[in-house]
Image (tube, rainbow, N blue to C red; front, top):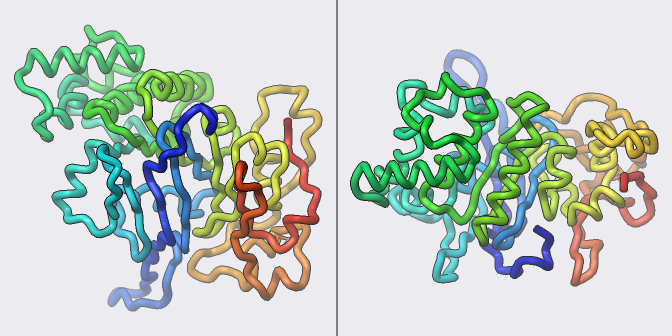
Length: 348
Ligand code: SF4
C-alpha cells in the first residue's frame, strides 16, 4: 500500500527510544561498559502502512521491535500507541497487566517457525491459545470455526488443524505462526525477519501472503524487520536503515532505492541479491569494507566512517545529525555530513 492510499493517521510513534545493556566481565560479572543497542531512535508508522527496519546483524533493529511490545524493557524514550478510540498511550509507562492486554492488538511474528511453535500442541491449540487466554471466544465449536477461518486466510487446509507442527514444512509453519498472530484481530504486526529462516523458494509466497493479508484486513499495520533490502523492496512503504543502534536514513521505499542519500544505504543496495538480471547488470559494485562497529565501543564521529569510501576528516571527529532533507509532502531523513553533495547509486 502506498502512503497516499491510506490515511496518514499515526498508529505508533517512537520518540527517542534507547535500550542500553551493561556489558559485564568475569565470574563476578563486573560492569565494564555499556552497549548502546538502540540509541535515540525515532519514527512514526501510519495506520495501514508497512515500515521496514533494515540493517546488518547487531544494528538494533530486532531490539527496537521488541521494545515496542516491552518484550525488552526500554532504557528511555516514549512509544506512543494510538488506541482504537484514537487516544495515545505511552507503552513504556503501562503496567505489566495493561501491556499484556495490549498484546492482543500488537502481535509479533518470529523469525524461526521451527522454534516458535510448541511441538506438543496441535495447530488448533496453537492458534486458539491467544483467543482462549484473552477470553475472546466461548466454546470449542466457536474456537474451531475461528481457527478454520484463520487457516483459510493463510491458505492452509482447515482439515489439518488437529495435526502437530512437525507435520508441516517451514513455509507452512510460518503460515501457522501468522494465523496465531492474527487470531485476536490485531491492528499492528511486528514481523521479525519472518522469511529469513525459510528456503528462498517459499520466501516469496510468505511475503505475498503478508501483503495480501494487509489488503484484506483493512488498517493492518506492519513493522517489518529485515537484514536484506531485497526482502523489503516490494513489501514496504518506507524504509529506515539502522547502523549501530541509530537510524541513518529513512525514506519512502522507491526514493531510497532509486536515490539513496547515505553511503551505507548505497552499500546495502549493492549487496542485496537482485533477481532481475537487467537490474543486476547495471548495479555498481560497492564492497563494504570491515565489520560492523562494536556498539560497546563505537568509533568516534560518524560510526560508519571506518567503512565509508566517502569519509573525510570531519567524519572522524563529528557525529552527523539525522536531518530532514525532503519536502513537507515527501519527508526523508539522513545522517551524513555530505548527503547533499554525494552522488550515490541506487537501482530503478
Ligand atoms: Fe561517510 Fe562521512 Fe557520511 Fe559518515 S558522515 S556516511 S563517514 S561521508
